[in-house]
Amino acid sequence: MELRFLGRAGAKVSPICLGNMNFGSAACDEALSRRIMERAVEAGINFFDTANVYQKQVSEEILGRWLAEGGPARRDPLVVATKVYGKVGPTENDRGLSRRHILKACEDSLRRLKTDRIDLYQCHHWDHAPIEETLRAMDDLVRAGKVVYWGTSNFKAWHLTEATLKAQASNAPVPVSEQCPYSIANRHVETELAPFCMKFGVRMLPWSPLNAGRLSGVYRKGKAIADTPRNKSEAFRKALEKNMDLLEGLARLADEMSRPLSHLAYAFLYRQPHVASVIVGPRTVEHLEEAIAALDLKISDDAAKKIDELVAPGSAPDYIGW
Ligand SMILES: NC(=O)c1ccc[n+]([C@@H]2O[C@H](COP(=O)([O-])OP(=O)(O)OC[C@H]3O[C@@H](n4cnc5c(N)ncnc54)[C@H](OP(=O)(O)O)[C@@H]3O)[C@@H](O)[C@H]2O)c1
Figure (spheres, rainbow, N blue to C red):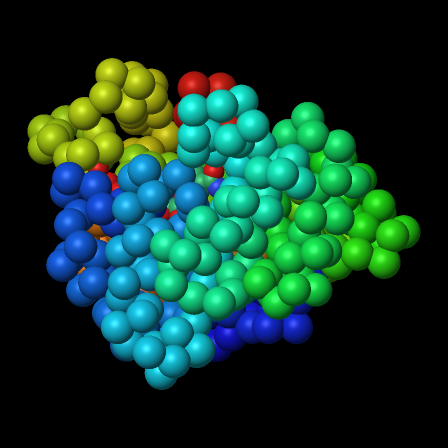
């Protein structure tokens, strides 16, 4: 798999990042999570993403046990990313991007991940904590060797601009990447974030590339819907119903290429110059196979034009959710 720069970092990552959010859920136990991780490594994926809040810390623990059991031969080739921000304790200070919380959360993640360093430590969401405090905490963690690079998630372009310029002014490390909701059906980040990325060298790590599964190709007009863990909620079903024409239009375009819609959805993101790596969220090995199989799909200019007609650049239907 051809590697790309992780945004402003010198390290390189695969165009697919394995998202670990499902690991430890009722539908994806530790044994299945391991099979997915092993298949990912076998296919050449070197980039894994988790967070200190996924499955109440179990996602980090599953990854940590698997890394430790494999020793340096398993750990060292990987770029391991996790996140800080979500509430993990009973008090108001057990969350956010304060120096106090970041330093504690980093130690906790290192312990669960059974590693001495986090390759990419991401601010999971923007916070009201002074950005100078967050920058200094990240700088200290980088200098201590506990964090290699830091990045952001769900930041707006102005959040990232402020963080980048203030980090540069104080000789602190700059954020290298931004993890954002981005898919063929949700193109909002193309308006401000994409130009920011191209100007400053930051690259996106899109999350929910299948729009939580709606772009998997499973959902077609007139076809019965089998229950899955993510599609049972009322909100999911409502968004599905309202988006059926759009999903059908995209699925027909994929049909013309003799591919499932999932391939088109992944390939759309793989080709974007402002994207470093697409964070896929498989619950099964078969889900992961689809993301890998989509790597060879080239979208022609004509097909790209048809995509733009269905979802205009920078737009998203109001009801799409993420
Ligand atoms: N930074 C953030 O705020 C944030 C937020 C969300 C996610 N993330 C990261 O991004 C990763 C991916 O997000 P996501 O899980 O929302 O991605 P996604 O690919 O949009 O959705 C994944 C879900 O889609 C369904 N699916 C996936 N492949 C499929 C296939 N080939 N056929 C049929 N259904 C398929 C599964 O749903 P069912 O299980 O229902 O079948 C799966 O759980 C996460 O693991 C996490 O690392 C980050």
